[in-house]
Image (tube, rainbow, N blue to C red; front, side, top):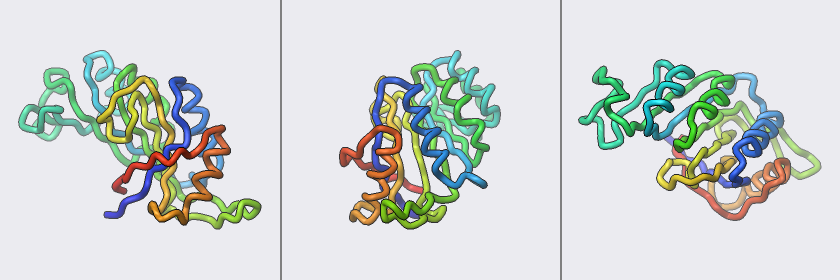
Length: 189
């Protein structure tokens, strides 16, 4: 397993603005075989029902630990709230319905892209799938849902913190009207 540096490029209290930024970035990326991954913390039966309508085969476990309930054990998630949910390798069209189903609950949606294009006028070479990711943290200040918030943050992933990808991070931030402030989280891939 490798890690990437998830660089925050836009933070906003307006979820529609964050989604517009994601759509813009997806429009720049190669998404021919892209997938989307989900994780979050579900606290209410209403949000759970909405999320399960979007992702019926959701993997989950009780926030208090798997011994308090899990999908693996066949438990009823509604009786184990709050729960942590995970779903991987879904088609891109599942992302926005998942986000809409969340209500106030925190989550992260990560798009596994096929690559970022070359941008010769900015001196940027094409980036392969291994380093092309985009994450939207919804109702959270971080990608791990450890700091719930009413803000939403768009992250672009770079190879590492040593600066070789900073020009791309800055360029992508500019495309969505954001800016890289230096906030980076290490994200396992």
